Amino acid sequence: MTAISTSPSVPRVEIRHRVVKVMRLHLVNRLTYIGIPWIITGVALVVSIVIALLISASTPEADRQQALEGMSYSWAVLSPLWYLAVVGVQAVSAVFPFAMGFSITRREYALGTLLTYLVIAAVNATGWAVLTEIERAVNASGVVFHHFTALWLGEAGVGTVWLSLFSLQVLIFAVTSAFGAVYARWRAMGMLVLWVAVALAVLGILAVAVLTGAAPPILDWLFGLPSAGFFAALLIPAAVAFALGWGALRRAPLRG
Image (cartoon, rainbow, N blue to C red; front, side, top):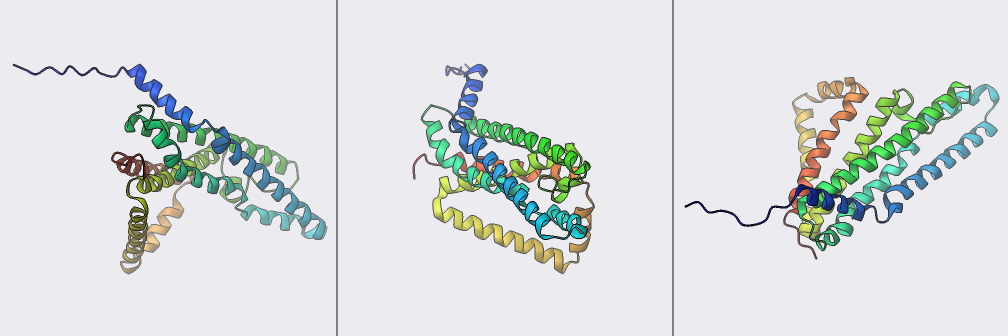
């Protein structure tokens, strides 16, 4: 005779409900994911405006435009991303044990967390891309100013701007949450081993590339990639990092 499983299956509607509940848990304090990044964006923009005014006031008119063009090398536009790295690390310790208390499975937690990251990254990237286009229009009117149009963002089209900012956020969320998952499972010793492993891997790759003469072709290939292709490729290590983080969380204890 064939054994028949009597354990009830979980309806897909219930799974979706739990995944949405994980997303709501992440967004209970919207200031963390939405408010503070945009506060940082606003503060960085104000600082750039003040710097532009100081440059304009202290530079002769003949050299003013060239001096203001120097702001196109500013990294201030990426300042919210450094904060999001902290959010990714804290997401595991803040939400993971709490979610388990609602009888949410680890798989549902991982899926809900991933969807939260994708939604937040898409919303932020859309807002920043719109501001980039507004600043581009301001520059077209004859006013030289670079904040959102700094670095590669000034030359890229709106689609590439959106994709680059989206991919960078997803990569940061995935990598930092993987570090948080490692800490949740193995604590300080796990973090030490992980950092040593990462350092050795980077050094090993650099050593092989230099000693075999592969470094110049690799660099030429990287710099030869179109911007959209390069930033789309960042989603691959993001997926790997998220998978590794999920693997660590599968057996992570709920309390340290």
